[in-house]
Length: 142
Image (cartoon, rainbow, N blue to C red; front, side):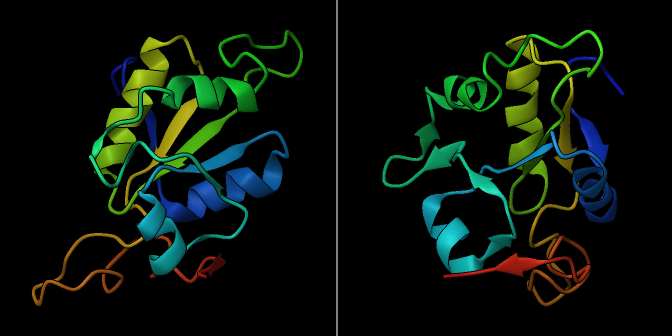
């Protein structure tokens, strides 16, 4: 894996990392509408990468992540870096957002390669072949 790309994780591996490391953060980067109405992993923090109505990249994305980890790029000597796990719909936006975090100096950046809803099946439905929700991991919706 290239050093400028986030490390891919399966939904199950991400869930286990979150359970094993209380410092790990799960950031849902989907739009507000996706987060609220499609659902999101239980305990996920919502920071959109792009959002309606303009669908432009959130110019404050890196700053908002830094606020969560009190500086973000700085790693503790003993405790290591705060793992940041990104999730989007199918793993494509989280890859791009993760690259941006790494370029900003973050060290422990991961992305859930199947996303929340996963890839489309032959009938163009999501959540039917892979993804956080398909794997039966905890989620909720408004």
